[in-house]
Image (cartoon, rainbow, N blue to C red; front, side, top):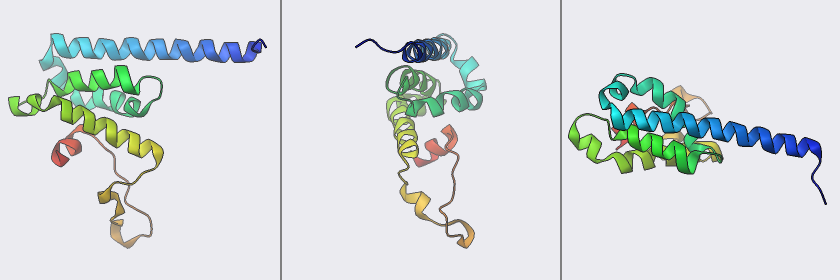
Length: 131
């Protein structure tokens, strides 16, 4: 049974989005490898782009993880750069748990007596504090 034209258009559109995301993430990884100081200066901005993609089923396991790993290798001092793999993996796990609705242990603390768990914006700096 042939797929409907609408499904074919959706598949083509998703494939195009995936290709553009992979290209952008590959560029970020290449910049990290070629000019770590450039990445260090813009780390917060770039992580805001990459971090949400770590939970993506399109690029999370491949391109986004590789970009996060490349950026983690740019971290000063050398002790942090040596821990690039655990840092990138921790970022991916946090994003995956956030995407599936899982709560981390620290999220179980209620903020200011409210009935809802505290909302956290996971950035690289907070991940480094956890690490």
